[in-house]
Amino acid sequence: MKLDILAIGAHPDDVELGCAATIAKEVANGKKVGILDLTRGELGTRGTAEIRDQEATNAATILGVSVRENLGLADGFFENNKEAQIEIIKVLRKYRPDIVLCNAIDDRHIDHGKGSKLASDACFLSGLQKIETSIDGNSQQQWRPEHVYHYIQWKNIEPDFVVDVSGYLDKKLEAVLAYKSQFHSADSKEPETPISSTNFKDSLTYRAQDLGRLIGVEHAEGFTVERYVAVESLYDLI
Image (cartoon, rainbow, N blue to C red; front, side, top):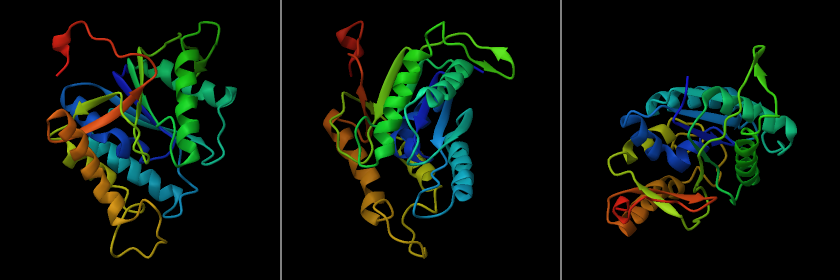
C-alpha cells in the first residue's frame, strides 16, 4: 500500500495532539494517511503501555487512517542511531509517502526533539540506494519523501505555515480523548500530569482558534518546515 502522508510521533497521542485535524481533513479529501509511533509510551505516568496500545487503535479508527504501526523503541531512551534509522527507513520504503509529518523540533519532552531529528534523518537516508533494507526477505527500493513538516506540540513555536482545519477540530478532539488514560477525567485516580489538566485540554481548542483567527478562519493547525515552501503562483496562497 502506498501512502500519501505518514505522520510519525515519538509516543502514541503525539500525532493526535499535533496534527489530527489536518489528518482528518486529508482523509476526508481522499488521501491515504498512516501513523507510525516510535514507542509505546511505556514511561507515561498514567496508564500502561497495553492501555495506550488500545487507545492508539481507537484513535486511528476515529481518524480513518489506513494503517498504524509501532516500532517499540524504548520510551525516553531511544537514540538517533543507525539501528533506529533503519527501522524507520523500512517503514518509509514500505509505504512510500510523499509527505512526512513529525514531532516538533524543540519541545518540553526530550523524546519530541529526538524523535523529530530521528525521523527527519531517516527520511533523507531512505533515499540512498546503497543503504540496503528488506522486509520478509524482500529487498526494498530507496524512497525519499518529497516534504518533511513538523507539527507543533507543547511549546508555542511560530509556525511557518498553517492549515485551515475548520470543521475538523471536533474529530481531532475525539481522537485525542480516545486516550482516556492520559487526559483530564474527573473520575480518574491517576496522578496529575502537565497534560491531564483541564487547561491543557482546553488549549487544544484555543490554540486552534487563535491560529485560525490569524488567517481569518475558524480553526487552524501550524507546522514548521526544513526548507522553503514553494508555490507556483501567488494565487495558490489563501
